Amino acid sequence: MGQGQGQGRHGGHLGAVYGASDAEEIARSYDAWAETYEADMAKAGYRHPAICLALLARHLPRGAGPILDAGCGTGLLGDWLGPLGLGPVDGLDLSAGMLAVAARKGCYRQLHRLALGSALPFADGAYGGIVSAGVFTTGHVGAEALGELGRICRAGGALVVTVKSPIWNDGFAARAQEAGLAQVEASAPYVSMPGEEGTVPSIAAVFRRVGGG
Image 1 (tube, rainbow, N blue to C red):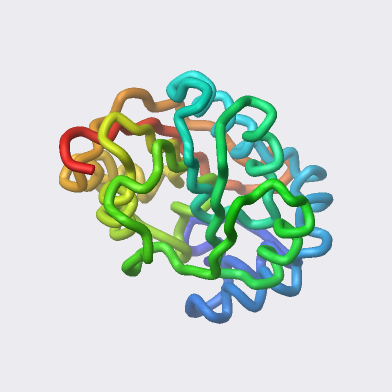
Image 2: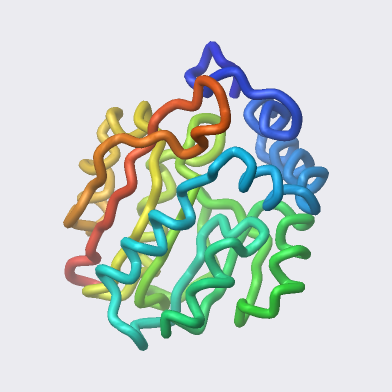
């Protein structure tokens, strides 16, 4: 959302995304951004994918898949997971335009146009690992999505997420525990886009699915 809600002074496509009033407007904003998204985020020094990749490699062994890239966008993460032996990889995203770019990379087993925060069409314990980079942020997705992510994560599997600090500080870890997810690691606060003025810090965290699944 806008600066008054803690997102900083963003313009262009990023400003349109955070200024959107509902999920469908967010999706349309990402659709319009899809073809230049990766280049634009590279210029901003976007850190979430690299940090998530490092945490996945630390907490998931090779062959621990399948993996769900929850909020996969254009496939920044999916493109890197296969070479590390973390697959097969499925992706979901709200934006059809972003999914179309991800599909061209050929790194996903399946892609789904779905919104986090609602029921997901996957079996209990379907995934050995789940990663969600840049999704738990103001105006996008909050802790309400943790219940379904916990349900579809296999017992012993890892959930790696980045979370904007206002959402993290509003009891995110406690909500994760309610979803059967035990916190095993959390980063120090960091800025996800050093090239964007006023970016609110984020936390990267790892949770382990306990019981069930």
